[in-house]
Length: 312
Image (cartoon, rainbow, N blue to C red; front, side, top):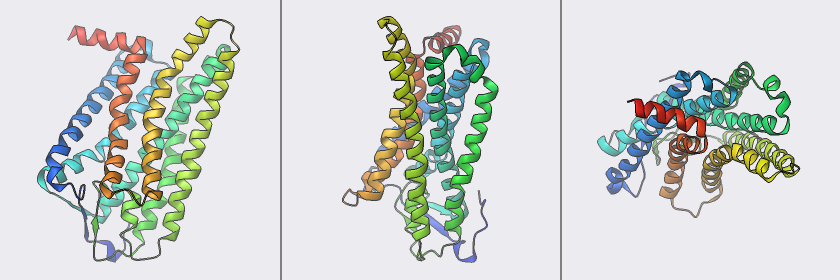
């Protein structure tokens, strides 16, 4: 996994400690990790399979759902297997290249996830606020282009993080108190000047994440304004029901994400193992819940999944 060109001082191995202070409970902690991961894989692969097989689901909304499922498969896969090796077999070593690669792919997929949520909000905005032009404005080709642009955006924004770190000298103590090579955890291992790294990390958090949240809030603000102007209460309910699943998915992603980032940067009084558990749950819970939320809230998807389960 050594993707980056690393300086001569960075060829040694880092040690991922897992969850310091809870080493005796690592085996027990691994059980929910493993269960959540399996449920996440099963749920998201089921969504991909059903949408692929059902021609009636080949529309922009379900294309976005498939893109979300792919990120929900990738996100825990970059973290959970490595964490389970630490918990089960005490295999804590990771090369510098492997660590930077994990950081790059993990943060890239996370930013791509956020981009998909913004696109979903735009999709619902057009569907409710401009329904007569929905098929003209939103189509599968346009959604695919937006997804590609989102991927390029994620790569360009995240790539400087490992590149800047690859130029840093690292101390003799290369022990990372974490289950993953998260940027904020790795950057503290450097003995050099990390001001640029910290500033860029803050820029990513406040500019990119907050801009995505602002766009989502703006979209749903316009949706609510449009819905309130509809005289029929039944139409109110129908319009809001189409947004419920999206809102739930966004809450499950952004709430733990913001809480984890803020406590990591500004919650120095919080115990380290709390930071680590929050960061891991942020990567585990949304991918597990998203297919369940859509399965419950989307009648059409629920019926198609039920058809395949009954057939089996």
